[in-house]
Structures are given as structure tokens and as C-alpha cells.
Amino acid sequence: MTTARIETVVVDGLALANEIRDELARAVAAHRAAGRRAPCLAVVLVGDDPASASYIKGKRRACERVGMDSLERKLPASAGERGVIAVVEELNRDAQVDGILVQLPLPKDVRANAVAEAVLPAKDVDGLHPLSAGRLLLGEPGLRPCTPLGILEILARQGVPLEGAHAVVIGRSAIVGKPVGLLLQQANATVTLCHSRTRDLPALCRMADVLVAAVGVPRLVKGEWVKPGAAVIDVGVSEVDGELVGDVDTEGVLGRARLVTPHRRGVGPMTITMLLRNTLAAYEARGA
Image 1 (cartoon, rainbow, N blue to C red):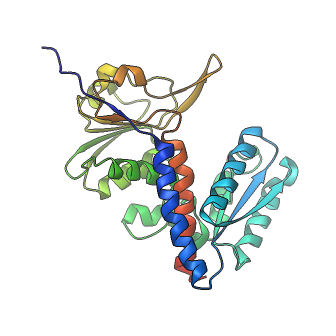
Image 2 (image 1 turned 30 degrees about the vertical axis):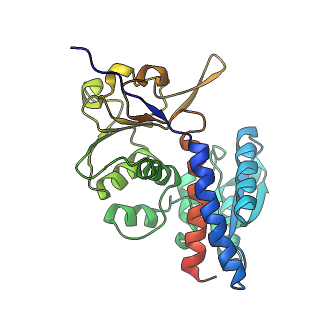
């Protein structure tokens, strides 16, 4: 029996991100009109990785667009863990700074977990502090990791029902896989968290109403893995023969999925936008 072809929506994450940024800009403008200072995001860059420098530039432009201030602290790769943490602690004490983000990856001699723990939880706009993770696990209010927040926002704005849905997440990282699974559970979805040792992954994927691929394996998810009418979120980005590709075979899922996010202009712009939203939330919570 042939499955009827479905008109698949390819989500324009950049357009959606710009819509949300306009909303954030209005909120920031309202604070400024009330005589308050602008929210401020501080970004720490360690080393001279070109990709990281490009990401920082994008975050600076995003802050400017919504009327937020941004502060950048650049350190040499030789700064070491103590040097990075010293800068983080300085930013913790700065009353003009509302959010702190330490750009990853860090040099090999700097433990990312140690740096994340050094960030004041109230300024943890990346949502990576153990206290932030614990609040997420317990369902208590707090700052959440940005990419998972962006995924939930895409699903919400595309009208994808989550209550009672079966969500399958491929990938169990602390940055995307685990937190997005918890957020989906809190939206009353039933979640299956998969990983490299999961048996019969295609069969599990075919049961998913919502499928999130965040494992970093190029074009892992094939069209025949997708349940007709499912929402497919592609988080992964890998380079294959000089070309950037996602975890999902996008062309293969067209005509089967209800929607799919492309690896370009998909989840990426939403991640930065949720960073701005977290910064605004941290600012408002502090009553700055």
C-alpha cells in the first residue's frame, strides 16, 4: 500500500528567529523607555578558533538588533583554566552584566564543566550550570539550554501538538539530547531517548510523532525512518566532502514529514535567539 504524499513544510528558522527577535526588541525598548539600562550579555572567547570568532560576531549583531548591550572578553589559548575562571568570576561580580556565555569549544587544558560551574546560576544564559540542569530535571523555573528551547519554540509556533505525542530523540548530550527530552516530557510528550547503542533505531524512529536528530552522524535519518506526518527536527551539522550536511536526509523525508528543519537556516538561528531571550529573562529576574 502506497502512502499518500504529504506537503512537507521546510521550516525557515531564520525568519522565525527574526520574528522572535522583533518581539524581544519591543520588550527591551519598553524597559529603556521606563528609564532602565539595556540588558547586557558577556561572551568569553578563549583562543583564536575562526568558527568561534564568527559565532561571537553573530551574537554581537543579534544583541545590537534587539537593543541589548554586549561585552566581549578575549583570552589567549594559553590562559589556562584558572585564567578563564578568573574572568568568569569578574563578570559574575559585574552588576552591569546579566548573562555570561563562555564560547565552546575550549582548549584541551580547560575543562568545560569546571568553567560552567564557575558561572553564577542567575547569569547562566547557556543553561549549563549543574543547578540549572537540576532545576530542569525537577521541572522548576530556571534558565534552559538554548538549542532545546529553540526546538520547543519551533514546534510550538508550527502548531505541533506535544501532549500525548511520542517523541524520539537521537542523541544524549547534556547540551541538546537530554535537556530537549526533559522539555518534551514537561510538555506531556512520551519520550524515547536513543543513542549509539540503541537497538533497531529505524523501528523506533518510525513510531515518532516528533523526531529530533542530534547525534552528529551525517544523513543518518532516512526518509523510510519517518512516520508519515511526523515533525522532524535536524540539529546535527557535519562536513562531508567540503559540504555541510545535517543528521537528516532532508530530501528523503520530503513528502513524508509534516515539517522538517533544514541544517541551514533551521535550528541554528533559533539557538542564538533563545540566548537573547534567556539574557532578557535573567535581566528581568535580577530587577536590573
